[in-house]
Length: 293
Image (cartoon, rainbow, N blue to C red):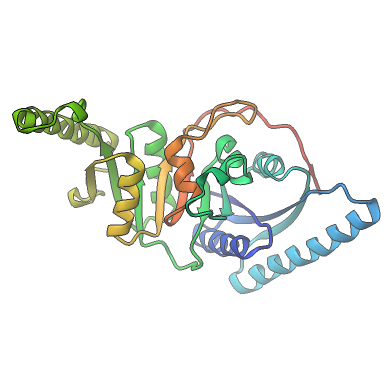
């Protein structure tokens, strides 16, 4: 990765994202682009005044990173609808990774619908890192959730590229067909048989999924859980301290009406830790240009 774009709204969450992006940029030797989006619409004199003040503040952060970390940093002010400008800048800057802060609403996941975070996640064609944690200490424990898809494999590869020294666990959640009707003592043997079949299928899928990485992911770090995916992920993070959760998404061009998957949406709305959402490598229609200065 050669260029990281961090979108900051100048809040505490935005500052946390900035610290994490700076730490990653330093480790990867990447350039860092700081972006703040103004809504605009004010009278010209006030608009110019606010833009000047915001640029001074953002440039101050850039100078600090150059001096303290020796990073190659540029500051940008965008004007327009925040999620559209962010997507534009990914394209225009040639960014390889987007970093944003998490704005959590525990227990109110529906508030995530239609937010900047969801709109960006739905259309983002590069990996998106949503930062919840305050620390910029290196990631030491990574959990990759997999449905054995191409996007999930790219999530695994991206996570290993970003944090190659971290312990990586790979989790697959599976269900037993007809489990709800296979109840009672008389049907227990059938349920057990179906459970064994589902587990064998999951193990075979994992072996294919890890192709080329079998010797780098310990057997003990290949996790199979009979549970709904979102619950399995959260329970594993509760059991084992986890710095970063990586999962694949199915990104579409911004004009598509496709929705972010329900598992990804729920996790990103109320993140249990930092989340790396990785789309499959697809050709994304070039977005419309936004006003960025």
